[in-house]
Image (cartoon, rainbow, N blue to C red; front, side, top):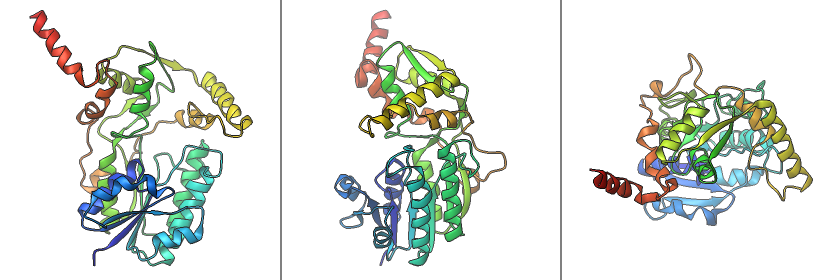
Length: 327
């Protein structure tokens, strides 16, 4: 019988790419999510019955154990940017990660892959980084031979980075960003999936920091995105002290309204995170150690950001027609 992998968060941005690759590898794939009915799109990744979404709540031992039972390998892709609520940093990225690793070990899984983030550190400056750091420590404590993957900001068709700011660029002449000089090393989502496959199949273990071939600051990334979507906007840097005030106000509104108004704009903790560069550390193991050549942004961005151009999919046709008229 084919081997089985359980992927927590397997219908999410990174998880779906790992699920697709593992199905191609011939494994049975169990996609463990809170809302299986919203994850039915993963079923065609394999043949009938090969990829199945199931109900799982990483805050509950019984639920996690049922999802892990019988699995040869376990992957944790669950993460959050919400510092509040039931599914906050601690519940998801610390306690949830610890629970998955502990139960995976108890159930006899032979391999585990944990998706973390560059900057994860129990002594980090932001609450996000601290929770990621504690989660890594808990995973390695329960599962010492686990693979830990620390990506920089992730890009791809379903990303919440370039898509988000491209959407904002349609609203006015100014594109505000906090931390315009902070450096990032964007990594293509399917490259992360390739790395995860090596951990699942036992070809690699240890901690790997994953960044693409390009290192650019926030401002330059936004300029690159604006070029792709054919829009001229002024990228306005919001000073950190102003951004901190904004984050505090938005967080307060969310707290006062009991979460009815969700702060999806800018949180205080995101401001703290933006004070540090998000690039691969010197001497860290990365794609080269896995034999993977990371994908450049230029090879992918146009494939999905074209929708944000003034004429959408027809922009190239209109530009071509304009050139004909001018000639």
